[in-house]
Length: 589
Image (spheres, rainbow, N blue to C red):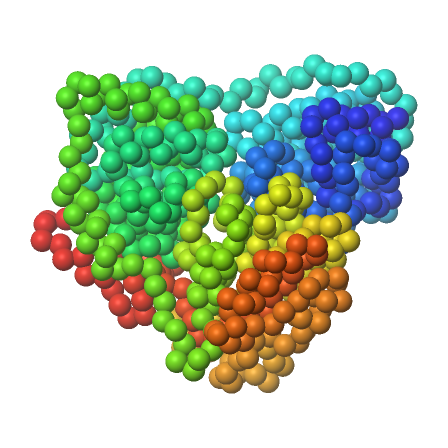
């Protein structure tokens, strides 16, 4: 049958884990799935969980993540994780059932035009109405998802195509005449870039998530050490270059390190590698890096010049681009052209010493969220994978955990999807079972997808979850504090509608996260005092036979600093509340 052909095809492309929920239109595929010894199916509690789990799996392993759902609401529940994967260039294949081909367009029971719905948020999508097309389309879907700029591909299969008889043969002949990603960069552009690097006085290597996707982190280290240029890694690239490396100046952007943001602003050359000049990095675009010439290398030609014109555009795979750049810079050095960045490093070092990342301990003796996250990072076993939700805890996890290796930091960067952490951690743990996986989540995010803890408990996926519980939608509350005169409209989570946000919070207690987690088969602990912090984290680290949830009750007024307010220039970065850095400029720039 077409359904057996689908499962055989998944086996042949190397899919070993599928996250999904059965339903009428996809049911024919679930029958042969029961007989497969090579594909493990994880029955999730919500399709959004399946999609984020497939993303976490892909981000942690570098392989294609797979999720499966039925037609109609099953498929539409995948829309958020598909959009999320699209924004972050994650290789994902989503397989959905569709009503029988003759019923398509009749508003049949549980019909939704998922191909039409996901057209803007997939790299490509397919509607399959013939059983004989299934192997070819599955092979094409995995090829498209994982090559060039990775991304999600949807395969929507009509129920009658799954039920019809067919002949299975492998490998199929792929038919993708218009799809030819360029991986090898143009030699002339590489030479131009190398010349600019050695001639620059204030260069910055601006590294994006594409470097991790391309497996180019070893090459990046060679290039950085060869040039001696400072390196800044975006939110999606944390771990692409070791945080502890002396050339690393931190993460740029709205909540980036002062040194990283300022280095880009004052640079005379920005070498962008697998990065897309996202608005969260650039701030107000027309005031971003006014003195800098731009070398922009990306595998997706559509990104080059999209937000910032490139002086030297380079289309190619980051690994090949960086390897070629290393050779070209070595040649420049051999010819006596060596960049002198000593004055630049004097400035960078001064900013780094004057404006380090830091935080204040709450005066009332309550837990500092930054300290909680910092200690989780310090006490975690080596090689631990961290998945974060979205909001303040995400930024603190980016700042206060040290990332030394790629694929140890998973988060929803482009879409900023609340509810990402728990299912993404589940997918990561399924993909790399030998590594510890911590989800750093907020009490708001956690209430969106925590039901996947049941999936973890029942499927022997022992993740650890830290709930940074400040009783509020923290990042939105921070904006209300700074920009809306402390009018806390609908950001208070810890009490009913009469709450004005003025009452001090002791965290969200409805639901009681400890009881809730225990009800889902997890080991759960609450931590409210700084003196208990290390003991609680070590207890969580020691339990590996089931999921562990720790409810950390933290101070509600902690804020994420540094910060560039939305829509303003990066020149207006605040190091802390009411603290604008003084860069002591004595030059005309």
